[in-house]
Image (cartoon, rainbow, N blue to C red; front, side):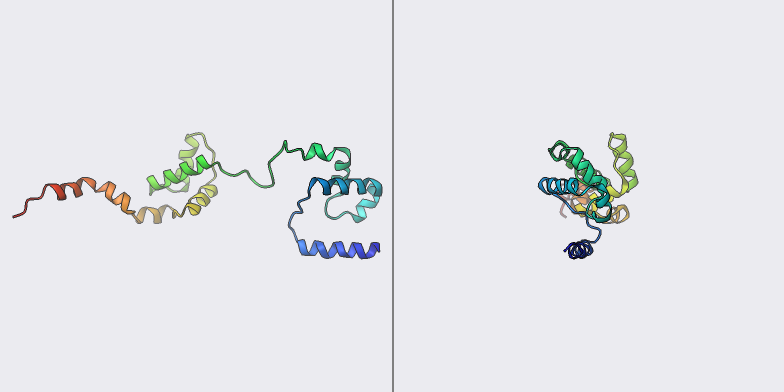
Amino acid sequence: MIDYLIEENRVLREQLGKRRVRLTDDQRRRLAVRAMAVGRAALNGVACMVTPDTLTRWCRNPVAHNCDGSRQRGPGRPRTSIDVAQLIRTMASGNPSWGDTRIRGAMFNLGHDVGRNTIKRILADAGLEPAPERSRRTTCKTFLKAHLQAIAAVDFFTVEV
């Protein structure tokens, strides 16, 4: 029976690959209770989903303390705030010749330390192209804003002969 369960665990691990297993509080508690009954020496040969150190830590510290919601941060980097992303989009659309490095420097001067790749990702998500293409393609709004005086002069100050 134990050999079968070990082989079943191996098959499940192969299916999961390198993905991280997300456990609920109840699952952690159940594993910690079973780990206390098995003992650390036996866990070294059996435990595969989490390390024996993690299981013994769950036994020492109550699971409720580790998962009470006081630490809400999950895996990975924290997301960029919406206000900072909006400011980056505004800078890029208002200054089409500015590249990622220039925008990063302007953001740093304002007190926001944002990486170049983060700026690239924000601009790509917004549908804005990189600096060389952005400065070559003028939008209708930018064109009208730049040539408003000439357009007004042609419309209102022409004399028909």
